[in-house]
Length: 64
Image (tube, rainbow, N blue to C red):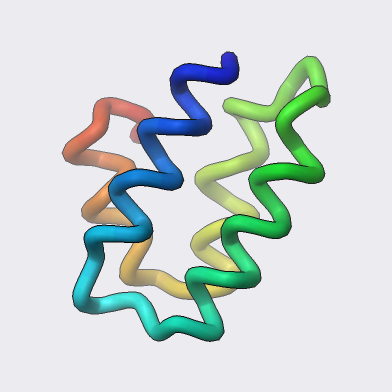
């Protein structure tokens, strides 16, 4: 789980389509969800609520 979340965080960091404010909020949420059993189920939906720009990133990483 930790490695998957780190992959998402790295991809978010590199993204030019996600604002810095959105990135910071995503990092914060990812840290909160890190220890939840169903994190990989909720992460795509919850991050998309922050910015729809995350969907192509998650798809590229194989999480959608």
